[in-house]
Length: 354
Image (cartoon, rainbow, N blue to C red):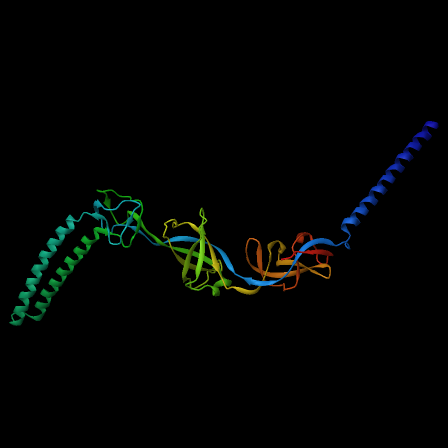
């Protein structure tokens, strides 16, 4: 009996101790919960007083650099290449002969055509004299005159073909790598080389349709390229007349001087397009903006509580964003702990001085 009573007593003591432990533990948790989660305890945050300022509205865009003029050099006639008169990768002038196709056969055809032309001219002269003496009809004279004109046209055609055997540069620029050698039989389908004018370069970029009315020809832009810190300038000279439906963007083209020759066609450009300067603009730190499904929102402090406000935000820089609507000068904008705030939550704002 004594052993049995002792066991019961131990069980009672252990159970009582466990219950006491849970009571104390729950009380402690409740105290901590009240201490840190009490809805009446304000959250300390930082903020700023919203002010207006002048905003230089620059749009950051991606563009591509293209040669001002670029063509593929080909021969218009078929034949054996008898001479190449350019060095790969060098500058050539407009009108410079790049290569020559053998024209021996064409010159022989020309001599034959010139002989026929002379005979036709003499026949026309004689027919004219006979017509004046009424020895032949007008119809016979017209036939002789037509034969002469046909012979002249044949001679001109062969001369044009001979001229095509000397391929000349249509503009000044740098010529690329050639794919032919002297003695190659060339046809119009063979690409000889590429000629590129890199003295000036085109920068093509697209802007969102909402900015279309702010872009005009003659506007200055700045751009940079990968691997260089130098800022280049260009001027817009052409704007696509319609917005691309698929992307809702408008294509714009600018032209830039490539004096130092360090810009290359085919590379990408980071374009800064200046838009209208906005007076009395509201610009806020980017960290105050909270993206939501329906747009963007911020929190302002109102009578000691956080108030959720939807905003219309647009142009963005690395550290700030332009607000078009939703905020006004004098609002206290909360800039810290915004992701954990809730509407109507009590806050204590430490205002930063600007």
